[in-house]
Image (tube, rainbow, N blue to C red; front, side, top):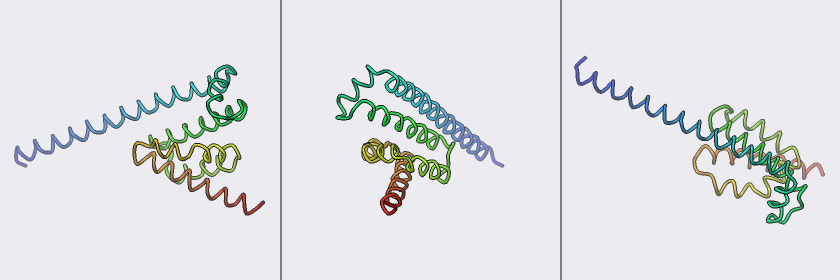
Amino acid sequence: MKAADSVLVLAAVAAAGIALSQRQHRQQLDLQAVALHQAWITDAASSPDLANLWAAGSGQATPEYTNLLRANRVMALLCAKFRVGLLNQHALRVQARWLMERPIGRQYWKMHGAFREEEATDGRTRAFNRIMSDEYIAVSDRTTAAA
């Protein structure tokens, strides 16, 4: 192997290492942001004063809003797990179906799914939203047909 080839291989390995390190750092930041989000939802759902403040702007009664916050908490956790690779598409679909089989999951997606799609910043989050939307539609169709 020529010295120039060795340098190219070394540069490629270094670049791959830097890319992997940046990806892992981004995943850690994502998980830290999710932890903060989860803590905020816990506070908002368990504090009547805070829940009343946020519910007032939503046009919903506080108990309904609090339940939607809890559904948001599950949704955010599933999204984070999918984004960092702890759930593959099949496992996410199973979890999404389970969530959408509950009325609060469907109510949350009906009210906030479009916003989640609008705020998606990357392909992984858009894939998450597609799966959630697919399962929402499938379960809603089944629920409507059974009624």
